[in-house]
Amino acid sequence: MLQTDLIKGSLRTIVLKLLKENGRMYGYEITRRVEELTSGKIKLTYGALYPVLHKLESEGVLVTEAENFNNRIRIYYSLTEIGHSLVSEKVRELMEFIESLQGIVNPKTGPSYA
Amino acid sequence: MLQTDLIKGSLRTIVLKLLKENGRMYGYEITRRVEELTSGKIKLTYGALYPVLHKLESEGVLVTEAENFNNRIRIYYSLTEIGHSLVSEKVRELMEFIESLQGIVNPKTGPSYA
DNA sequence: TTACATTATATAAACATCTTATATATTATC
DNA sequence: GATAATATATAAGATGTTTATATAATGTAA
Image (tube, rainbow over the protein chains, first blue to last red):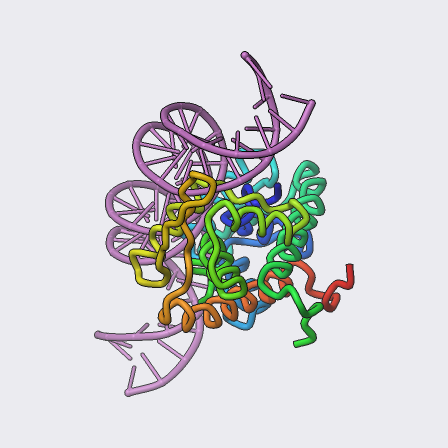
């Protein structure tokens, strides 16, 4: 049963995947990247993002580095080893879930070529 | 912004879509069909399903008919006109969301041919 | 120089949703 | 007689999301 942590929890996987691909990122950057990748369709809210980031940190999945940029604090997040080993698993789970959804919502047709 | 009602709310759309395709269904049947369509990967829980069905009813999206089958009550759910006009919109939203997710999780490759 | 948009992190309250546990009851199978 | 499958349903608790709010610096246009 995939469902658990997925219908609700895709945000975690998104964050993990972006950090894997981009090395290290700060919160604002993550929301920007998601908007960019989805043509503005998905806009993360900070009220959702920061709790997820903090939780991932407390779980040892990522670490933070605070840096000064233009007199502003910028907090970079990057994956730990644990985090790295988690990403592919989570991404695979999400993709399986997506396939399952497509099996329900779009049972006749194959993958879309949009 | 699709996100709202989707990361969490795909259950509504799944129910709507199944009712559209199958005319009328009862709760137990819906969970069975979802398991079937997803090769057992998604198992709906009744604690999630029934509240959704009741809510959709209170919103005028579906109606119920109680019937007797083998001395057991079976409650069939079917879409109202409002329900019918809602399905395609919700399904389109869910598919857009799926595409967005794929854009994040699988940015390089096209659709999977698994 | 004032105002507004953008950049940047963060928390709390309210709300929605989901899981788990529980209750009930019939029929079929071992 | 016991267990599995069929069938609906609710409550408590956990989790996750939105909305509102706070703070603060920089860039830009009027």
